Image (cartoon, rainbow, N blue to C red; front, side, top):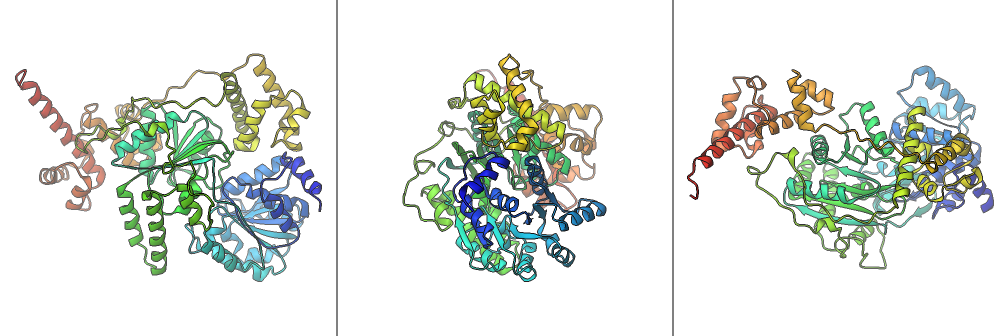
Length: 638
């Protein structure tokens, strides 16, 4: 098959006139029936490597993927391009599952997405033998290895593929695998003399910056400066716990920075809504736990900021690598505290399997060395994955002299007893603004086309990136096509996409040229404390407020305690059981109110952190008032 034979469908369906590095070689290996193992960074174009051979083969590629949402997005995206694809999962009715299985047996799909759990069942394996399978593509293949940072036992069962389909090729794809993990992937999947494609782990457009923070107050000040300094694109903030996700969103809103949260205890619909608001650029900042990010197809992420030490270099590389997928400069910032190491060690000590404990300690040593070391960050990452760079300094990390201006401005700290409430951390010192990447008119056009994309995605019930990639949107705004042939020259616009949206896009561009702009009326957000205060005045309970604000109960109680401490709200005796309150107060008299954990350890187990936090807030407020009265009574000049 000639290069022209491959480029024709690439242009026709994907709208690209050339391959990225390694893509064509991987496609040729799969077309020729070879097993392959591909290690390619996030955003390197792994999906196309198995999607294009599926289209050419006229058979069905079975894609094994760990996330239902990711599978559904990919299938919808392919359908938009005119490539028949489907998903089979447990959320569908049994009738719908049976219908899709019949269609797959008839060869109606070029790609069919399944979870590893479903694929390993005897029923599924027997049915797959009726499907015209071209090959199997295993996404996130590092999950098969016990040495990987995201080991999933269900992936181990994929060894059944070689037993049940000995003549079908198997392709393993991952973004983060050390040499040991790569070897384990080959062994577990029983790949036969596979073609191995390992891209460089060096991402020169990313700037790695690491800063140890004395306390959470400093960490939040630096976070807010970083967000204000990042003028374009989107931002991901990774937080270690659900409570910290919600607290951080509240702090950002207090500082006038719109943000949405994402964590595993949210309702699925709420998670999806927040993700889509971020994906469609309605909100620039998303604060999430590690539950966020797998399969996210967002090219214009200009910063990924971690608020705690990840458990491994692999995890950090994968999460930080969601920045700068468009090849443009982006920052990867790690703001960690000394207590992070103690917390990681605590969780490792809870592991019962001795072998897994050893592996966890090894990951711990590597990530600590990365954070605390004084060697080039890029070089540390490359050597961790078995790559030996020919250079010693990168010029794109803090160790090699590259630091953002906002990090050079001094920050202030305070003791736990003297500090203001967490949700009132306000950064008044402006960071040095970075130069704008676009002219005013270019920025206005991009916002206008983003709004058009949001409207189409809401109307059709699909993700915004399925309508148009960020990279395509940026190219569209630069070139401003006036005809369909000119639109076809923009990367990412295949035939089907032009049929679906071409005339609408040209009409939207014409409206902009005629003076149309995005409605600039801002919707002011209520500050978290004011919102909670208003709901309390309406007679809502803490549980009611948690539901209405989409927060955990502990987050609501913390906000209420902060309001009490600052004198914005009177303590209500009904909040804490009258028999528990004197016990808590007695413990505070002995131990002080600085450390809630010490109080919790000294009190009966039925007394919750929420009870302690509320009583402590009342006592701190009383102490503050006493001090104010004492200071006011002092003679002038004393």
